[in-house]
Length: 93
Image (cartoon, rainbow, N blue to C red):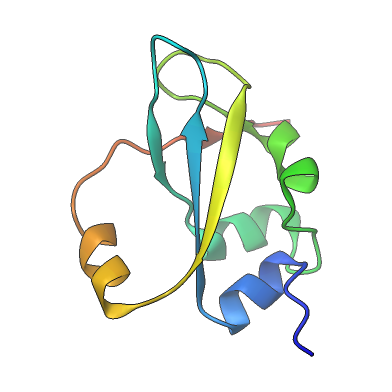
C-alpha cells in the first residue's frame, strides 16, 4: 500500500496540491509549488491540511482560513496548471 503522507511522497507519486482561500469575499486560489515547499519545510514534512495550514496565508486578503485539494497529476491538470493564476504565498517565519 502506498502512503502519501509527506511532501516528498506527493512529489514522488506526481500529485498536485492546490490551496484555496475560504474567506467569503475572496475565494483566491492556486497551485502549490511542491518543490519550493519541500525546500522550505523538508520532504519529510506532513502533507495533511493540519500539517500545512499554519504555513499558508492568502496573498489577496491575508486570511489564514485556507483549504487544500490533493489530486493525481494528469495531462489535463498539467495544461490547467500552465495557465496564469494568482498564487497563495507561504507564511514566512
